[in-house]
Amino acid sequence: ARMANVRLLSFGVGGQCHMDQYVARMIRDTPADCISLKLGINVHNFTSLGIRTFMSSAFGFIATVRDGHPLTPIVVISPIASPEREQQTRRIKENMMARFPSLAQMRAMLERVVEALRAAGDEHVFYRSGLELFDVEHDAPTMPDGLHPDGDGYEVIGRRFAELEFGVAGRLLPGRVGQGVAKRVAWGVAWEGARGRGATWHYFLLSGIIFD
Image (cartoon, rainbow, N blue to C red):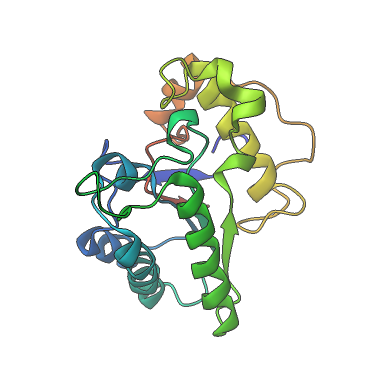
């Protein structure tokens, strides 16, 4: 947020991001210049949505948000890398077929949701794979528990997101971050900004609503 000179309103709910409609309604009713929705990881950890319901819940969540923001750019972000969970599915019983999606399946499902919305005429919704922000091959050393990045890992995510979505080719507010000129942001400075005009980008973010 500091890199792009925008103000972030974070609906981070600490492990409880399950595409609940009351949260979608809060975002719908909040003024915003652009919106990002980071979806999936908590659903996987809690097996709160199955293969049957994951996509329909994502459709409903995005549609509710869109009701209040008809032309606002929305970026839907799938889960970042988590090595043990990439292909991990869940079963109600061992001898039953998988009922809950893996992270890899969630990414494919969210991409399909966005493609369907765009095909239906919504030109202002976009997909971003979480692997573009944090992947196993390059970033695993900064994820000590296999699920949560450490301080350096969070900084990597924030810097990459700023360059991708606020850079020259960004889909949210393009041109606010010069391509390739992003600098490391000291966490002390970032947290100081969180108490004032700026804010940091949080991994557990469900929805980032950004104002000029």
